[in-house]
Length: 300
Image (cartoon, helix red, strand yellow):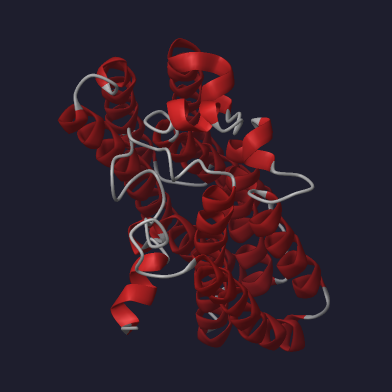
């Protein structure tokens, strides 16, 4: 098996969702401390990257076992419906399962180094991340199937890495860490929410009752819009508080406008795959650009 195949199995197009919050939290922590600890940053970056890759692979195994990926005819590869490694015969189910566990185990190595440098709370954070990675897909919790997938991913790839990295760099957990982390949580939760739309039918058939399945398209659209308005509005609040420059807050208008465009386009996702792909890409861009703008705002 080629290395490229194993990289593809991790769904690398989504890994920015974990590394951008690490960068944001590390920059905010370094600004609080007055300097960047580059070793801590590198270890944090690698640990989060491996944890996210493991979660993606584990989720593919779970969706193979419950049949969701097998019957998913409405998927929009490579954005929804998993990596398709098992369904295409590129990797066997057991190979994917072992691979996910190996990635999870590898994430322990930089985590252990961070624990040595920063203390036992790193262990608690790492265990929490692993539990969420497993519980998202598998029994007994199966958070995604209970309509809690967006919440769990928002915490794991938003609030948790931002707050953790601020603490790792500065030894403090500031109000800014919680606030900026909450906004990142909203953006990544919205990614999950949108990406679940093309998979809703197959998820419902296999009893994977995601939030999108429970709310229907109309409800999902409105929840998405409300969340994005909260995220955009928070940037103005942060500017007033002095967390970011007022110039950075004006980006909220751009991001809010893009979110409204996504909200409108969601109506056509089931009718036109080109529109669906555009909507998903635009929503991913909102998350990425939002994290980058917050990071630049903290820097300058």
